[in-house]
Length: 230
Image (cartoon, rainbow, N blue to C red; front, side, top):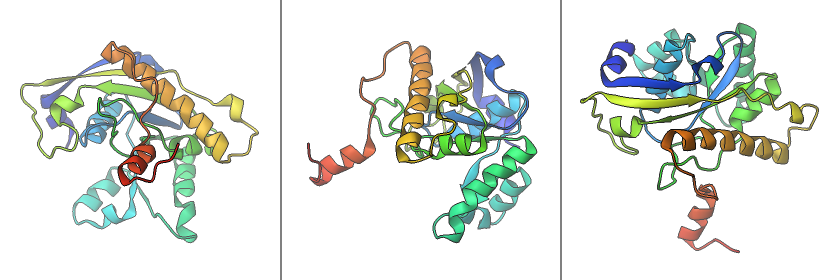
């Protein structure tokens, strides 16, 4: 249903498509700066030969029609919060591994808040899935969806057709972390490696260097509320 509309609005220019795994379970981690990114990235995954899977809040699956479409397309409902619900993402990840499927996880957790649309500080969900399940994580960067739908905008501008440039990185196996406790320090260290890889790919696409310090939303929130120290 989505592909015809995407084909009309987007042309892809993909670098290193051969690095996109054609079999087996893995996590795909792209940058995120437009509300339309999941549709554009999902369509790209389909074009590259894999059915895209996303983990989404279980409440979204209760919406009439949309919930039915999400389930039929293989998306994964995840309950959040509470002791019993805390294991839901882990169970969902195990199902992916058992079925040899891929899952798309945005490591930033939301649209980047960096003023220049560079990747901001990542959250640990993507690397946690990869490390706990022993599967690779593939970094990816794209540039151009902001022309289709600017950050925070509700309007799509499909015409004229937009070009989305994509670069896929080498799969990260995180061998150096195997055997280590998956504590906060380990997860943060692995996440920093992932975000460095994504940022490097985006630098290549944009032909410019990212800021030396990655945007940290918590620091800026503290400054705005007067709670920042140091």
